[in-house]
Amino acid sequence: MARYAMVIDTRSCIGCHSCTVACKVHNDLPVEIIYNPVTTVGPTGVYPDLHMVHVPLLCMHCDNAPCVDACPTCASQRRDKDGIVFVEDEKCVGCLACVMACPYGARIKNHATGAVQKCDFCKDRVDLGMNPHCVNTCHQKARIFGDLDDPESEVAKLVNGENAVRLLGELNTEPYVFYIYGLEVKNP
Amino acid sequence: MSAKHQSWGWMLAVDFFFAGMGGGMLLVAGLIELFAGTGQLSLLGNIVGPLCMCVGCGFLILELGRPLQAWRVFMNPKAILTCGAWIMSVAIVVGLVYASYGLNPAWFGMDKLFWQEWGALRKLLAVVCVLTGLVVATYPGVLLGRHKGRPFWVGPGIMTLFLLSSVVTGVAAHIICGMILPPVEMPGAWNHLPALAGGLLFFQLVAWIGYLWIKRTGTTAAEAASALKWLQGCYADTFKAVVMFMGTIVPLVLVMIPSPLCQGSGALLVLVGGVVMRCLVVYAGEDRTWLPGEQKYRGRLPLGNEAFLKAWSK
Image (cartoon, rainbow over all chains, first blue to last red; front, side, top):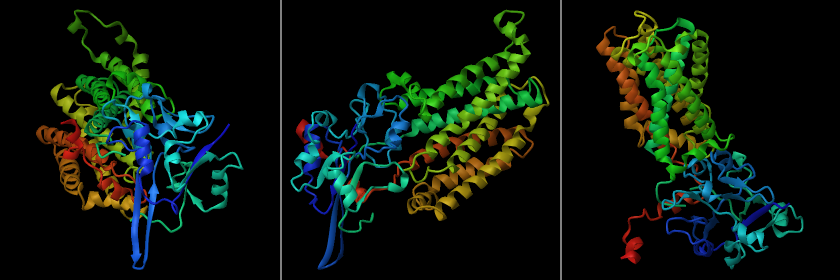
């Protein structure tokens, strides 16, 4: 058993959008679908004390995933063996229940197929022992992926050792994507 | 993330309206059957209730991305949508069987319809109508109220609003149906429905004022911002003019006037207010609690009709 998680170190992210592009290319996504947007907060402050933070967003692979509970067809599932949340395309009827239930906006309806799509941590690669494409392509090593149940893994050390936070943690969805901020980030 | 339409649209709102109204009609029919006796409501009303739910199901299916696989929505018992689909299916069948008790055997060239002699079954069906009607009338509110990331919906208050609106539209529909095809027992419980509608409309008025006031003042910043749209923003004019004034206050006055024309007009306005209210509520759910920098990011995404998006396909 494993529990895959991702730590995003915003101190290292330079907002190059390489992860966004790598994800779109390797997953062959239509132009309007983006699994991995990189948002920017700022610049804030007064010269010369200016700050800007880039925040890569993706599916949070929540332990208490509201999208899985909301899906009436069981197309949205969470794998027991590693906690990855994914959509089984054949079962999806495109009712948008999961899209509306997800507080992170991580799910998108593909208007060509009628089904909903989302980031699945590149589960086929992960099953082969490889990292997701976004992690591989990040030249700043701002994305760290691994097994949180393994105390020797880098993600476990970062989550336990740094001030790692979860987005919208107050909603109790228990997301498994953690953020390390160098600065206080507020939604402008 | 996509710039295209990524939330529920008007068809789901219309489904909520028809399903809620049908559920309200079943609830009222069952209660009157149990506590006031048989033949108090119009046969037309008893038939229209389940049929409204069928129409609602039709709109729900059309809203799906893959309508031909609609049967799959019955598969996850933990999902509210699945529970709603099952309960609505039971309500439609039970409602139609209950309504069949009012059919005239002569219409089918028979002396009697055999099940119409089973009085105990009729009462049992009325009980099931009350239970399933109540659930169908309430479940859209429960469904919306569980959305943690949708500030205007989240919380139990929306459930109260949907239940009230479903019951009042159900009562209004029974009033209209009774005017088209009067009940067997006249004067009876049907004559008191306008007063009931008036009371429910008053509660609806108070509930909406309270809901918006609580959202605006007592909760998170996102919820306060969402409520502001109903008071001063993009939904304000339609909400105040159609839902509150035309769909609640005017019918509240009209149904209290003892004139069939006034009461019928009032009932029709209640239905208009009900469908517009649901459209506004569903559209208000498009607004999610934003993540850091997300609003600016989304604002820069193409809408889909830009020239550069089509350049490669020319």
